[in-house]
Length: 506
Image 1 (spheres, one colour):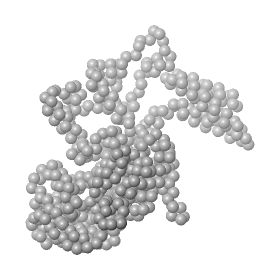
Image 2: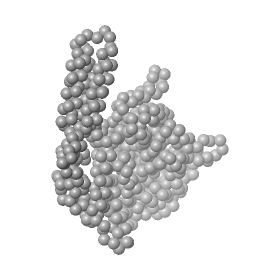
Image 3: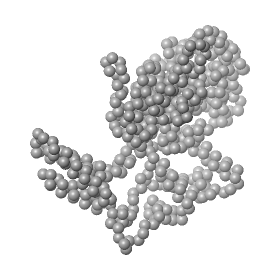
C-alpha cells in the first residue's frame, strides 16, 4: 500500500514539473508525502479502508503545501479599496499638492505617468493584481537550455501586461512597480471584533471586502472573559475593532485579552480600532488623590503589545501623548461625517457653538470644513462657558457670541446624560436662536439622556454609530445616527497600503 502511494506521489511530482512548477516544489511534495505516509502508517488499530482514506487526505495536504494552491492563498483575504468619498477627496488633495510642488519648482512633470496623474487620467494599468508569469520564463527556469535566449527585462518584454511599455523610463517602471505592490499588499489583513459593536465591525468588513475573523469571545459561568482565535494569524496584520463603551470594563478586558491572544499567536502587527475610547474624561488631575484614568488605560494597552491605535474624536488630544513613541495614535475627526449631513440643510446664518472652552478647536474645525466644502463664508462661532456644581451637573451657563436669528449647531465629542446639551439649547433659544441642532461623535445617552433629548428644544441631534444603537434610540424622532464605517474602512485600508491618512481630512 505504501509503495503504491509513494509511486503516486512521484507521479504527482512529475506532473507538477510539467506545469511549470520549480523542481524544489516537486521534491517538497514527495518529501512531505513521505513524511505524512510514515506518520499515518505508524497508527495502530486502523482498518485498511480507513488507512487508505487517511493516505489520500495526507497526499492532498502534501500537494497543497507544495504549491498547487499558491495563487489561491495569495488572493485569500485580499482587501479592496473602499473608494469612499473620503478616499476620493484624499486623492484630489494629493494631486493638488503635486501640482503645487511642481509649480513652485517651475519644472515640468518628470515623466508622462506623472503628467497623466496631474491631468486626472488613469495611471494604473488595467492588469490583474497577480499577473500570470509568461510561459517561456517558467520553462527556462525548470529546464534551462544553452540555446535559449536570455530573458529580457520585464519592463521591455512584450505581452498583454506590458503593452505599450517598451520604452518605459526608470521613473515609470518604479511607479508601475509601486502600483502593483500596493495592490498585492492587501493579502495579509485580518479583521477581528469583540462584542462591543458587532454591527459596525460587519459594516467595515463589508466595505473592505473581507470577512471578520473567526473567534470566540464569551464568558465563563463566573463572568471571566474567554477568548479563542479559530484561524491562523501568523505573520498577518491584524485589526481589532472594539469600542470601550458600556459595559466599559467588560469591553476593555475583551480588548486586552484579544490583543494578548493575537500577539501570542505570532501576529505580525496588532492595530486596535477604538471608535469610542473609554475613561477619556479623566485626562488630568483636577483635584488631589484622583487617578489619570486615560493614561492608565493607554499603559494597559501598550503593555499588552499594541502596535497602533485608531480612535475617533478623543475627548482630549493629549491622550495621544499617553502612548509611547512606538505606538502611533491616529485620532480621526468624526466631524467630517457630520459636515455632509448639515451641508445639505438650508441653514440661515449658521453659527457653530462649542459647549465648553475645551471644544473650541473642534467647533473651529467643523466650521472650516463647512466653509471649505460648501463655500459658506458667513459662518459664525460661539462658545458657552459652564460652571459645574459637581461631575455631571451644570450650575450656570454663559454665552460668548451672538446667535440672534441664527441656526446654531452645537458640536461636541460625546453626549452622556444630555444635561449639558439640553441646557445649552435652552440658553441659545433664550438668546434668540432661530433653530438649534446638535452633533456629537459618541452618543452614550446614559440614564435619562435619550428622554431629555426627546423633550428638549433641539431641532435635531446627530450622532455617529461608534456605540451600538438601542430600540429606544430608534424610537426617538429627534435622534439621527450616521455611520462612521466608511471613514474607518478607508483609514484601515490606507494604513494597510501605506497611504496618507491626513489627506482624508483635507
